[in-house]
Image 1 (cartoon, rainbow, N blue to C red):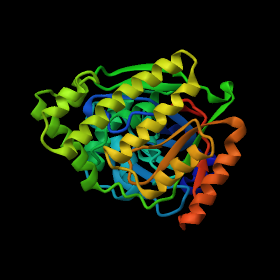
Image 2: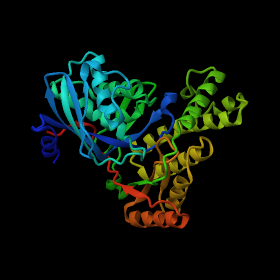
Image 3: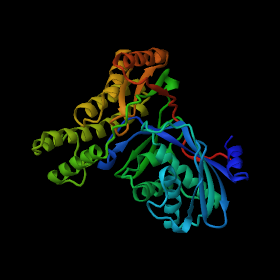
Image 4: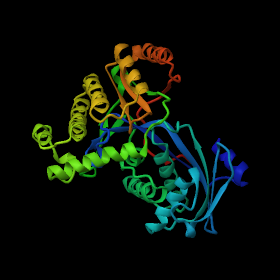
Length: 378
């Protein structure tokens, strides 16, 4: 129990325990910075933070994974002043204080069963759990979507990662048995029923264990391509281009690479809309081909897959999956596959065999029941 571990580290019982889940995106990749649409679910895997208040303005951070207790002064926090993983809880404290919330010093112990480096947003979950712990220790209530916006600013401006808002919104605002339909342009949220088990289905998430090649330069290039295209087309963001207007837009662009990037974004936004319509109509099996089309677009037009992702997707489809795609930013991470529940083991076995045949590191399946967003545990 984390409360006992907290007492071992800090010599007293915690005042409370909070949690925030990781996420997996069902569909809608690289649409967020184009003001598009995304459709994530929260995972059962999560970051858990036990905390106790301090009256002296000192912050002390520790992890159940070991290592030294890291200390900082709340009043002296500046970007870059706290190293390594502790930059995330420190960033949460920094943004809350900068935003006028009367948070205090604290001792925080972090525990996790969320895989790191798999593209499941462990960093966003750590920020969210830390923020709600710091707020909870002072009895301050803040709406979940506002917490998400605050910790995104912390990740951008304190940690220095230029992330969008999807991960934080998913961790804070998802509900059990639903996907979160997040329209970035409108800043609107809707809960879409998503319960594969009720339809005799299962959503498989498979960590392909590829070295995560999410190189900053590659990500930045994709974003620059989108911004360049939008400027050439005279629109603020690519969300403004409809599927009906896609051919005309592509004809106005000279660079073939930029054309491919635009085609992915515009068609991916449309796929999110189609997926939501099908899920609302109870036609979950029909969402499978959209997953597959999304993967093809990311492989051929956005060029963000790696061999492990492609082999896992192709093998899942050959083994009977209704649809499969890479999920996340690309260059490593995970795939998702929508499968009949009865085919779960055979699809996983096929992927494992294919990886062995290719000499890849064995993949790892991850439980993916759509779960609830962040909350206080005790």
